[in-house]
Amino acid sequence: MRAWYPMRKNNIGGPRIHPRTRHSRSLGKEEMPGGAVVPHFLLMRDPRIWNGVMANISRESGGDIDTYVFNVFKFVTKSTEYCTDTDCFQMAEYVQMPQEVVDNGKGDCDDAAILLTPMLYYKGVPAKFIMGYAGTSSHRWTEALWKGQWHVFDATTGDYFPVDEKEKRGYESLFEITPHSARGTFFPLMVPLFLP
View 1 (cartoon, one colour):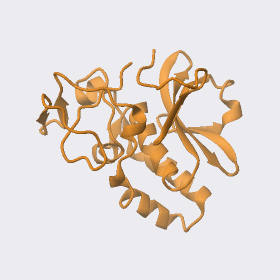
View 2 (cartoon, one colour; view 1 turned 90 degrees about the vertical axis):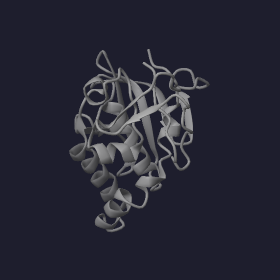
View 3 (cartoon, helix red, strand yellow; view 1 turned 120 degrees about the vertical axis):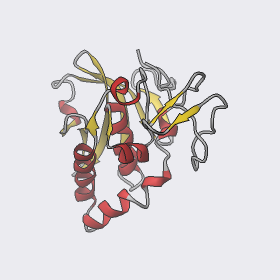
View 4 (cartoon, helix red, strand yellow; view 1 turned 135 degrees about the horizontal axis):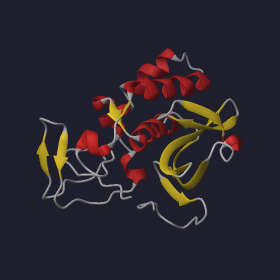
């Protein structure tokens, strides 16, 4: 599976526009006859969420980091309606930037995890975007430190549990990604641009 992301103008800190990308705002999609593959860790560097959603949740959490983690998870779970890329964007694979997920209110597992991970990471919470499998299906989720222990936060299903229960629940990690790093679980030098 490729992480296709149509490049666009004026993304602060984001990718540059691809010359053959055409915008079609009426459906909220972009046609991309010749796009670019952009690593997930670059997509998470979307500064637009820092002063908006993150600031509001931080205020509501009263300075308690564990409360903040759970409030962010609840926000992403409740505000992101599951929708396949084919149904939402008429593309086989489309990965949104965090603010796009907030604006659109829908996305697949990639999108929910790409929103959740940097909202935790940039608040100082150790957090990773995970590419792997849940059962036999390719899946994405977030792992973060919460209440002194690493937890799986699956914003697509609303499930959260300690990482040591991952295997029992059928989750298998292939790649761990933060907004500033990427490494394979089994092959630490690989860059996760593709997932089988």
